[in-house]
Length: 315
Length: 315
Image 1 (cartoon, each protein chain N blue to C red):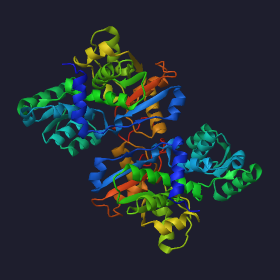
Image 2 (cartoon, rainbow over the protein chains, first blue to last red; image 1 turned 90 degrees about the vertical axis):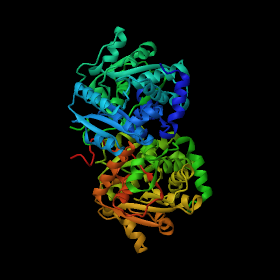
Image 3 (cartoon, chains in turn orange, purple; image 1 turned 135 degrees about the horizontal axis):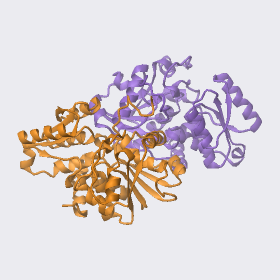
Image 4 (cartoon, each protein chain N blue to C red; image 1 turned 60 degrees about the vertical axis):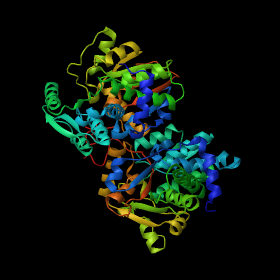
């Protein structure tokens, strides 16, 4: 079922020993630039470098004895892979991770460091799904989808829940949207714990499936999402889209240039490493897509896993 | 006089409204790598991006009415320039900053944003000193030396004081040394507030004046300090050296390659942007210069002001 406040509270208690209560930081220069008061919730400082840790730990630690004995599995080239491998190792169970063969070395190494059992496949969705299906059949492992899973959503909801506890009353919380796990979790937490706060989603113009889905009122998949924000290329799911449709206030889209400029601006002003997918929120401010004048604006920085050899502003 | 515990406590109270109580963070990957428990005190997240803010605010807010009317002055191409300009603007007084004409645009802009009055000079110590002398004569401004000043030292001491309050009992605090302001402050704070904790200094081999001074027992200046750690090129001062000589436990030196590797490692594992001068401490771990096995090790990350277009590991 869609997580209610009780389920989110229990998720927060369940994951508490295994995650960071990440700090909320501010920057005078950012505030001055946008004439608003911005609070950054730093999930880039989360264990394994992204909010994905919350959902993965919640999902793994919610499994019963029998499920645990089979282990967990997923396909992911990104932060969910690391987060799930780490959560499984904390619980002492196996994590089967299907990764496209062109995944970055940094990400492959991180999954291996956490003890994940990697199976490589061709870098396309069909190969990822069919490879995972084989593994599930062979091992009976429990599939933990990166976002289209209510335990994952409840886990991700704890980021906004903490944010609300740590900050003054926020007028707006701004969240990036890819598959919608963080967004739907943030919407639920805000609905239950700070209902006057608006939640606005930001996504790349080049992967504007959430924008199209929300404003057309029916699910539109992400087709050829050619954006630098690699965490936001996925389509919404049938569990995340209805929550988004019901509660989100606005979805805005941003250009690739603004994403790069925003990423650099945040690095320079806050001294925090944020990934491209986290920069879409600040990009929305740069492109003046929101009325934030004089408001208290919360921004969830979703992650900080970046290939430091390949920064988009260095040619 | 050399700051005592009372002076350091008063400095902490004085600067409290104008600075961040910066967070202390940890990284499992770093701990695993060095088989130790590392606590990072994040002065890169300090206002104006470096610990220098502490000393500058303490010095400016310690001035009497008459001194205030003349304003303050210094020569600096780096973090002290920004910090002093910011402190002066908070106090509503003038800050005359002498900067070498080849200073980076980022640093010039930051000083200007804080309202500093910049005078450019040739990029050498003689020109910096003579230009500053002229300004002091013309304006009667109070010179605030970046480190050889007891009010500055008392301000910098508040970083280690906070660190001690925020952490479990530390066996060692590891600090970069350039002119010795942060180091001498850290030594005094540790002497008064956690006397069992050892303080160890790290500096580049290519700017090893503190190493030479400490082990020879007499002041050795920094000559042609050709290191990438640009904040550590300065010589010790006659106020900082005696404190270092009296209290420091050990001074270790590190190679340029280790500095670059350490900087990258910290970025990747902690998601924090640290500058080259802050990387010498972790470089000492990489080069196995310290016995830290199983110890609780505090590291002060001194700053995060980096030219993001020019990262040393990207050719």
